[in-house]
Length: 376
Image (cartoon, rainbow, N blue to C red; front, side, top):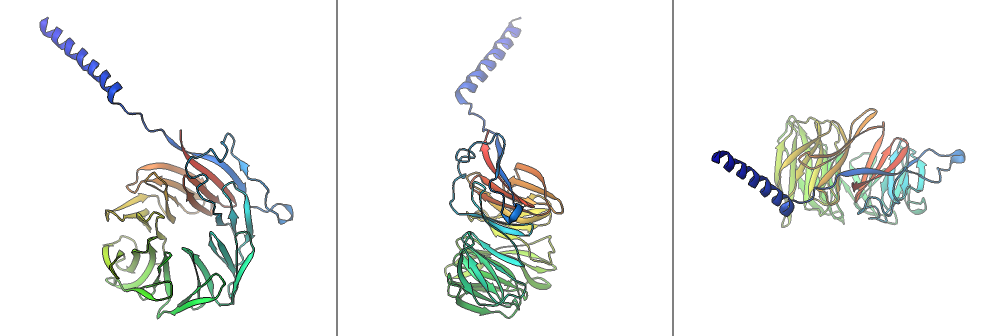
């Protein structure tokens, strides 16, 4: 009996200690994060060609100034889209600033755009409202990136950078066809069919010239440059294909990481660094490959076919990306080691994603949708 009494006393003491620990040491659980619809609008022109005047607010959604917390009003820049044969600009409240049909191609940037024809002998540079800012008389195909404006020549072997007035700043003729591009405000890196990478500065001066080699067939299928211009990454070669990362040390770029890949892409593939520069995200078989800059570790976010690489979600250490093909799309928000926060299946044959703070701007065929990530 005495032994039984001791065991009961020990059990009561253990329960009492557990209760004390709960009140003294327990921390509140993290609230669940959810995507809340804010508005949706159609891009289909109304009668007479004018777009619909107002976006439809989601039922039960809070005012945009309150919904989503950080990031909902984080940027005054207009957002742009290119979907279902149309392109244009809209603001965070879903109001269309400009919308038009794509003639053959369009170069888009937050501050300007240029449309061009198949045999382009020149083009106008316009503001997000459609106002003409300048004209360029160069033949070729414009593309805008990282605050810079370029024109790719019709033979795809030379490139010219143009200024705000549309005039040429410098030109560079390469000995091979340009197959890939990646850029930062200070470095424009071009991948060539002959397997070399050439990086050019603001005056067209050569800052990088490198041929990774090592594969049976040369070729550069993707290039990315970190926002600070210190890292250049490329997917190169066939049989075998590999990932190469170069880092600027003193005045030259040196290989800091390379790995043979399981991929065998024979087309340009999507790859870029996130806006914070912490991660390289690249198209890989079965999803999005992640290279972490700080640790030089690699991981995979499993998501099937990835059409556009991911964007960082502010303050969460998460990446958002769109995957899928045909009529099926998958919106994924996950950590670099594939811990999932969001797996949202969508139906669309053409889709786009932009993340601004905690706001997700989705383009699905002829519709634009804003959803805000918030705690519940």
